[in-house]
Image 1 (cartoon, rainbow, N blue to C red):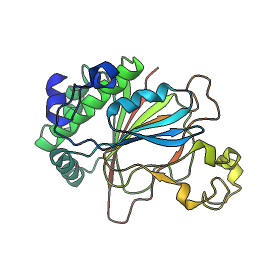
Image 2: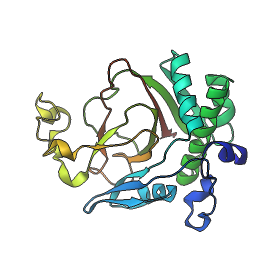
Image 3: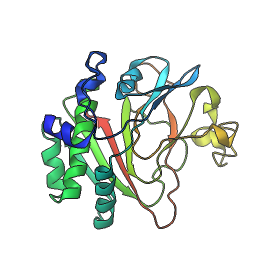
Image 4: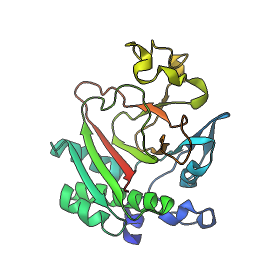
Length: 247
């Protein structure tokens, strides 16, 4: 994985460890990362070590803000333009992710560049959660996949949008969870009373890498992140990656 890390992103998986802050390759300029706190709102961090804070009891989203390199952004745009396959699903490990992705996505420069970055994220995800395998889904979207605010009944999911508008989420302290699902009584999210104001909706950005805690994280029922897919503007497509635990 060292070659992959050196060519596609600014860190190796070891950079998640507080003792390895110098594992940085300056091919992408990191921005900031935000964490939604159960009681304190949000705070900013400036490196991918923020992802490890998902283990804290009072945190249900950890966001590593990163700016895609021009090479990676261009690769994503080319991939979207040249592909019609809606979704690619794979079971991958840190050892085989890059090869499996190349087999699935192709061997042209754009696909290889994209595969390298995804393989690194697989390595980071599996390292952080001590997983042998991860469930990978790379999806091209021209509409919202999950348009209503909801909670996933999973332990934790990694999401990142390589191109296009990204996911929306709500802070735990500001929502009325009784308005989720049937509790909305047929009203829209904006009208149901789920959250007080449209300004309460937080938006991930293209390139952000986020860990979303679900309802099956240990014993944290009632604290899974409330989120939804964004509406995709007419004529545009979104390239979304998700990584999940494999039992």
